[in-house]
Length: 202
Image (cartoon, rainbow, N blue to C red; front, side, top):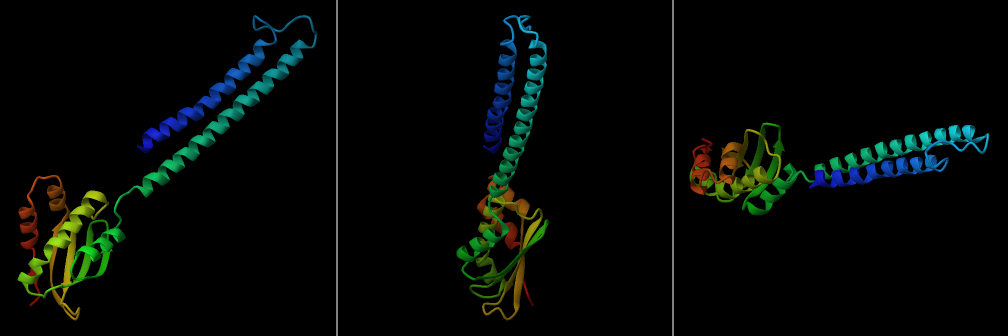
């Protein structure tokens, strides 16, 4: 969408230079019908030279204005593209805070991995952790689809209900979320992949 807008804008800007050039050509034609200066006035040659210099300056100014306008359009396009990057890491964490029944304690992200810490909603056993995988994995699948997630995986550390100790952890690989979003694996397979990584703390 932004590329189309940029092309239209630059095309319109380019028209300014064309108009300026046409105006310059019109000024030159007024010196004589055949494009040559009239011989009736001895000063025509000097006037023509001055007109030529003026026209050259006008063209140069028009070209400079076009270049400046193109740069402004490119800057606006870049700003729009940056604003349209989709779900951010902070928005992902905020979404989880809404859909997850427990408490989102912290989320930190690097290029390859995201590190999520949550307090369990039900408890810290493997079975209880497995019951809470859905909300987190679903939220991460949305982040993978709409944002710029870590390239490798989301590592989840689950604390006890009161947050006093580590209950266990599990992993959601980004590739699994991509496959799920593309319909290459089912909801059940996506969940099973994650459940296979669940480990309760001893």
